[in-house]
Image (cartoon, rainbow, N blue to C red; front, side, top):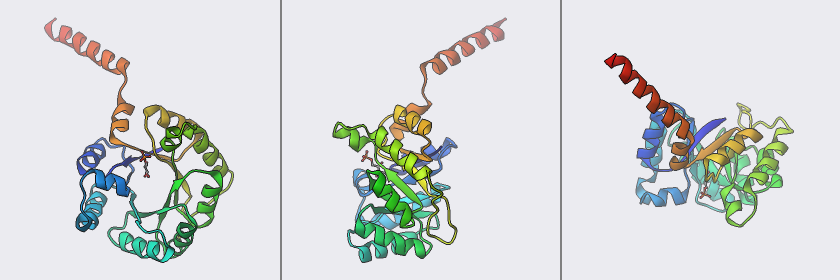
Length: 226
Ligand code: E4P
């Protein structure tokens, strides 16, 4: 399983990248708004993320009609070679995905909530599909079950994207709210989990690690004073 950071915060991205386990970043309009991002700064901000991260960086189209999504996608992909264009899982999004992928632009189909949506995203040529967990939990449904179904259904076929590279279609478990979400997604075989910085921090923590380290330090102190 690979880990992407789900944020637009440069400090969080720099810190997470320094840990050596970061494979990419996903952003969305809400995450950019959360850091107080301004429209004019957006292209430069995405470029900066792409410099920090050695891996795919998802930048989202903010349009709803296919021609506009395609225009956004071309502009975003021109910012850096590792930009992946995020496109909503709608009819217009599917059409735009096919056009972009045929042009060699990698697409991450987002706001995916069902197996039929995921299958259509794969058939339209997307490189990544992002099913959301937490937003199901928010409406008292089991997001992990839904993502599990999508992982199983997509895994039944050898989908590749529609770019000339024919790269394997990968599932990005998104809207992740806890380290347990990550555990369950790994057990079900999701290719990638995109996680907020707070979840990434929790993933590395364990009380027995802290207690064990404390004991090793105390015992080494004894060795030094022996
Ligand atoms: C990432 O691709 C998604 O946009 C993000 O994970 C959504 O998370 P949220 O449901 O916590 O806003």
